[in-house]
Image (cartoon, rainbow, N blue to C red; front, top):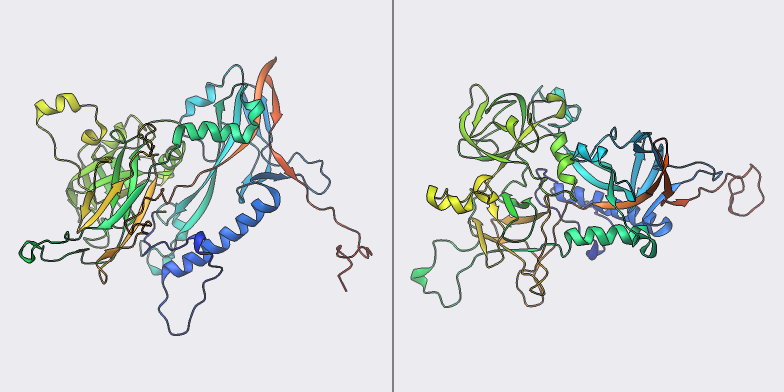
Length: 482
């Protein structure tokens, strides 16, 4: 979640059940957000424990089809209207088909490439952060037409998708089959450790830097995010000291020149020449979630000019020519924004040296290469280290959008990061994005006239039937317990 947060404190392993305010104390965003996270964790865990990881309601009479039932007709599949719970997350659906779903996956050509034999239809679910830049109604105009934003929202996003199936699905059952296929793509998951650099023991006083520990002038929440997925040596990353929360709505685009709503409140929360930026809109968010498809990353750009009077920036290249998404940033209906990142890419190599590195994404896309051979400096003493491959054979896999949050504090001069049993910074899996999956149907065997057989893979739970008023059954509606 790329919000302007001080830190994110929820940890289910600490077993906190509530956040209680005390009189006369400072209120922190982290406390309020943790209370929400505690409640949501409780509710979703309860639903999962009671009914299962992926269930739909059949209704009191048990005759309703329920939500997300798959049918295949006219060369595509559709799902029925209704509700479904995936790992306790409520998904609500109007009748839709693969092409017209509200948040379609990245690749529209997949709608015309259904296998002739067997394939598995499934649901992918996650939560998306929504700010006033994406949803203008969140802004209180009484504070100014383009005044400060206040709170943000999270939104449940679900996508219908499919994958090729084979006979191994039958002994495994649908959900284990889906998990095994996803594990092949994303396991073992890449990890990261963070710390603040300190002088080594025995360093002579004259060799000490002027300050040790975190040297930043302000408290920060650093965000390290995977840009292009893959393994070490091919995956790339980017980082922000503001949790990537510096986003500026784009009003219009003409080639490499963008007109923004503003260039930021100040130098710390704005953009200037030399900054690395990314253009994000509703479509790119959906594309980033299509994690089974390689190459879902967007391009990064360098700001070469920033005109505060005209509220314009000029980028080093025309984003509308991005081959991943032609016309990027030009459609106001998709709520395009400019997001600032704070890393600086590796220096450009001499032309001769570039000949053998032309295809390296960290050279041409203004990102940094994921390396596992030591600590990597961010800034002001903050360092990160990507985890080593455990068995030396199976490489860790990094997925586009995986991210880690690192709070750095001026008072302690430290980065808040958990330690392992040896007192060293521990390797941790990403803090997000967390995707949830549920099998819906197995499509196979053409039967003619554009129809195919569909096996329903959903799990129902039945709502209790209402009892008549005055029922004498203890605990039933109409007759309270005495």
